Length: 353
Image (cartoon, rainbow, N blue to C red; front, side, top):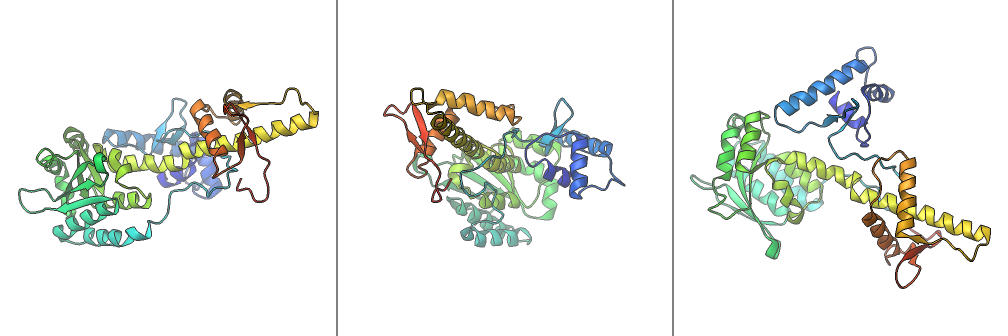
């Protein structure tokens, strides 16, 4: 049921239990003979309460109006994209160069050799642009990784737990993961295991000691997202890495990139419509000027009519102006040397937009 609800709410729009149920029946995800709107509401509400009670981040949240949505920033912007660019999506497969390290990591995670697992984790971090050192042994960290970022470098301590029985002692392993932070002058400490328990004590220990919990699946997900050490710093904050990776995956499809595409698409439509209207009316004395202020007002109006409660910002308008007039896109021209307004180039068969 949770998987079905997740797929229905994946567009970022909030829905009532009745709407989720109706859409699920339409898609063949729910059986009306055995499931009801009340069942959906109760199951989602109880799941949220249980997950919060364990100190974890639930997949869903319930708004004050009793509608449910994914536990991500609301995306109520329309799906308008006439840029001609490839659709926004989270890659389904990792980069080819990461495959050997991923296969080695999965093999080590299913085995019983802690040393092999530690080395596989170090090799996986090297995929992200870290220089790693495997230490291991008693009274020593399992390893550490230095980000190859010149003066922006930072160090991550690596503590690996392999055996299936380790979940019993994960709460005790957190302090061990943070033990060598000062000695090795590290900025972050990471505990890596095939899986983690979901007990409140474990979550509390992560926060107390400032340790990030990464599963092997989390490392694979980071590789699939094409991350490198310059983009991973925030992912080493205390807590579950899966939560932050989920936010990052969401932003790839529903974040700034989508908003820029929507703004640029609307600007093209609005600007070309203005120019055609002026020509049709034969008005040469008061030609429309698509300034940032005019664009802000008109795009906001279009978004409001589409049902959005989150308007466009001036920074997003200016970014779209810069993108449309760049030599790589070349769909708009600056109207004057002061760059106070833009004019749209009519589309052609050779245009990418």
